[in-house]
Image 1 (cartoon, one colour):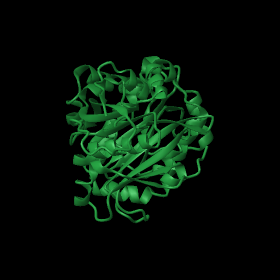
Image 2: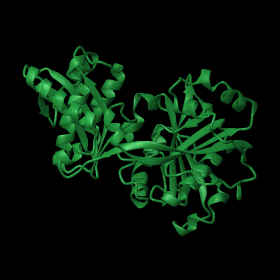
Image 3: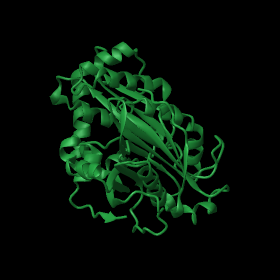
Image 4: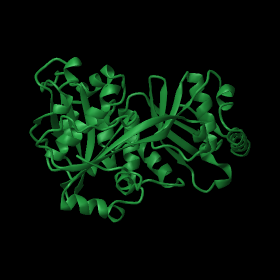
Length: 383
């Protein structure tokens, strides 16, 4: 459901007062909160410009598409802007995009990233990302947040409470660094790229591609054109069909997302065996989803598609092949890894204490925030 934007709130951020003036001109730095899809989309152009200034070009491209995802529609987008300037053209030093869980249309004051890599969560210069993340936590806690988790590309730094606002709610915070397999580096040639993979993976990529070509006359189609109803029908006949709402969102992205990637493999009889979709930007191809026809387990259609895709992307000159949310395929063992930092804050209140204690029952088993709250290795410090 759409949530009406609330009035923007400006809050002091003592933690950043020594760092921000070196980056942007303007009045005393502050934190500005915007709530709701429309309010966040109104800043799309400014966010894209901020991405370019912080070396994260492309991170906020296609924001309207991302905020219309079925999982995003179940939550309330919240944008935290750090720095100067309240006009649409004003300069900011950092931004944090989070999502508030809601129940029956009401916000629960539980905030989390929607991107476990943090690439589309904290937009700020590398040296300021921890400070920007902590300032966002402070601002949300001041508004009564029970818990927040903010992720960003980089390593967690030693935390210091110096400069913490006297008004911020008492809380416990934890920081951790995760190593995340991010992308497969692509070499100048297909053979050179295959050489970076394990022997078993190379064998399977070749074997299953030859098998499907021999048995079904498989043909790779680098740019697929089809109607929405056909796409929905293929999804329903796949090995792991997603709800129609999600499939419709994926199809709509083909026309709405910049640099769209939509490829497929079909048999000689014209039947689609596999479809794959994602985005290309600045030498990176990021895969968002793959659909494989059910009933052909011996053909390993997922591996076959990856074989074609690798060869095609190398020919295009793509430098990196990434998979949103990761991939269970064995090629992940050859991925370049990156550090991702998480900052988790929990308010010191009875409600927050109960949420943390009941995390295993409140959140689904694979929920990112729930997993973080249950992590026995987290070292919590009292702010």
